[in-house]
Length: 367
Length: 152
Image (cartoon, rainbow over the protein chains, first blue to last red):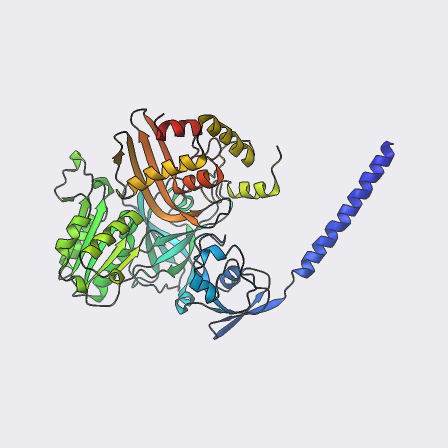
């Protein structure tokens, strides 16, 4: 009896084994799409191994489409136009696309599998996004939870970015981390210093990347990042400028001011920096120093809850009440805001109420 | 109870270092479904639904949102502050959308109970009845949460 049972088990195992081998072989042949072509903007062809996502196929060819969720199909950041190929729209894409995007065949690059030739349209500025290898040359403690970290690119490498843009820092495995993640940080240094970038990074409890930066990284460590990304940058006009930032939102504004110091400007500029108390202020002397660099520039830190020991004699409360008195001509004023979405919403409302056109308010809301 | 393949896939996303540094499961030895079912039973006994709890948490987060990072006193009892930092997180269950890294720090001053939750916590409770595993950094004990946010 036992022998019969054992014989049956052995037979079943053999059949299962054979079926598994057939499945593996079938999988290999059925999923072998060979080499397929990706045509970009009708100008450029790249050949890739078929079967991978459009996002990863492009990344393998050093074309980096922004993605906030790492290709999980949840953020909708990696949208691109497809003019031919790409297969049918997937249920995972539909909720992240507008009606107009559905009509124009916009797709999520992370969800589209490149199984045959495909024709895509992507913005030209994406070609400027590259992967850089760098070495940390400086780490500065700006506050108890904010560090400035400078990354020097490999010899001969240069990064071409606009002041205000951001990069995606790529972590290396550490502690319980077994894989890399990418996280976005605004560049705080000027574009003219193109062999290095500085980032201002605030520690976030439980943050994979900020914990890595704050607790693991040291001068001399090698770090990679991709970039530059983003459409938050200074517009080339002669309009008055209002900068408003909070926390690590100071980074892109610092980059813009450092850049303006190099190229020169006659524009009238006011910069409000919101913080809770004095311990949250940083780079104050550097920002104040711009008042003697530019013909008209004012730096106004505003504390919402200064402590008694702060001996604060500057502006208190939120920045909104101070905006209107600063605006000379609302029709000829641009605003550049970087900080939390709550701050951006409140400041935007105040600016619009003061007569500044909505399309003249540029912001980076910690996306 | 053995975890289903789908459950295993979700639990993999909940491991440390995948979406957050310490993950969502803490040192809990139960499967995902066991964690959710146990907490659901607790909620039933407390006569609350996950939606009611998520709505109440969202109420406090929204009220403190406009104060930026400042603390606000709500209904004379609750001290709340919500801090938003750069970046967004996906739902480990694979829900469409990403959730801002907004951390709400909450204190019921009458009962002296302090708790913290994120935007993702509110979604996980509302959509999945998931309060995270025991020992997780953002685990919310249902009884303590109900006691604090409803002042019961």
